[in-house]
Length: 205
Image 1 (tube, rainbow, N blue to C red):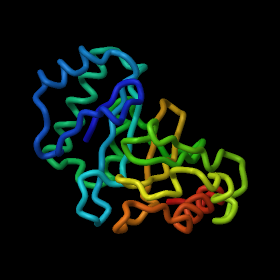
Image 2: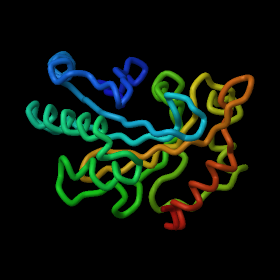
Image 3: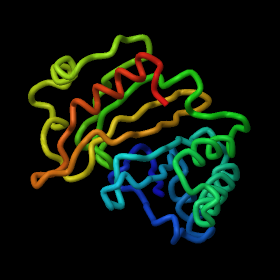
């Protein structure tokens, strides 16, 4: 799991879910970062890496200080005790901690954004689809990115596509779309095109 303020994921505070910080450490971090706070939970993608392209996140900037503390303490505890052991259990339960009865998938994502994990801002992310747009194929997606895009070059961390939802608050589900090579993580345009097509067609799980 990790926390970041003001979208600076390059400076995220992260920890293994089995070794979480104390409540006082969480409180200290929140006191020092009172602005646009967001949280992410990572899941195994089969590579064995700690930082993967499979994660889920939410911004909690709209919550009061006490609500932020409750939400994060509750999340840390549920992950530590493995009450939420899988991606599906987190999807089913995490957001309802803030807003009962809500899930991030209702109505489908508003946008799909491609970027490098924990380097979204420094490498530069790119919107590859918006709600209502047709799906682009591999060639169209490559053209959209542009031949000089760093997202087409090997990266030290996985490349992922975020399915971003705006309601009831900014939240996202990221899926891996790169493969690890001797040069680094390379974008798999075929994987990206498949996800864009499924979301545009309304067939994504």
